[in-house]
Image (cartoon, rainbow, N blue to C red; front, side):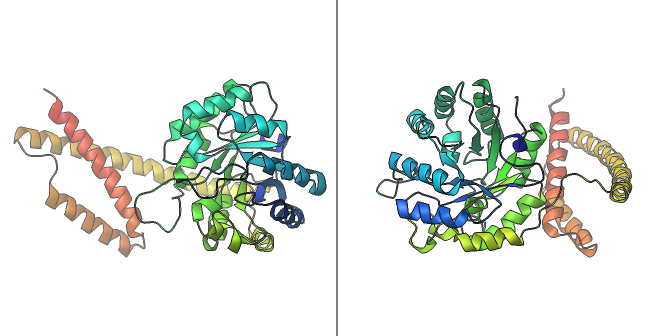
Length: 359
């Protein structure tokens, strides 16, 4: 994919892109008053507002439609802010382009539907407009990548990802589980792709937004999309996760903005020393894993010869109990140990299964 660097078309390379605005455009007064106050925050470069709201069930607020695009033109005219809206189909896209929206974004529900993504990509073919793509609702990295490829095939090079978390059936304090590892994997696969975090939709409530925002910046993400409403208590959608413009400014002022590159020679030398130490430890670790694999193969052969089952519950329970106990004595968190043990056990099962299947 051909992707232009974010600072070539929105911001400079030393600043994260900050996007803010209400979850939904509700009235002209609400949009303009919110934009007026947000425009006083220098770091905010894009004003967002939902014009069409994809709701789970009907009879809830589904957006004001095309009228809201007229209000956004007023935001551009009076406050000098660029604007961005979510589009979910060809008609939305055509109307957004007609009214001069600066940036389009594809919502999580739409990203999950390749037919809809292709429909929008066809409309913007030959148009020089940035497109931001939110991750699909479920943790499907290939589906997310496919959406970028469809727009790249239409000639769109100003692309960015929006990480807004993933639906999770288990218990979590977040509205959408961050699963930071998937955003990191996306960056690994497509290094030139900017990734912007949406702390509002990950958090689901305003109390968690500062923590999620700082975590995103610590991981080197290229910006934040944060929902802001002039009066969140009366918002028609997602009231609990929206900040007032004043609270937004306080949040942004309190964040620590980190650099992804180092210029100080002393810092470079010291970091190089640390990395060399890690390399040496990892080399030892790889050799230990090889030794462990050899023993597992011997165990597998022995079980095969004596018609024993691969999975031994009592042994697995003992491994978990003892390893967690050993690790906790060294100050290693239980969850970390459990995850490592699970990975090692899965690999052990795989190796022994392959041996059993050999004739």
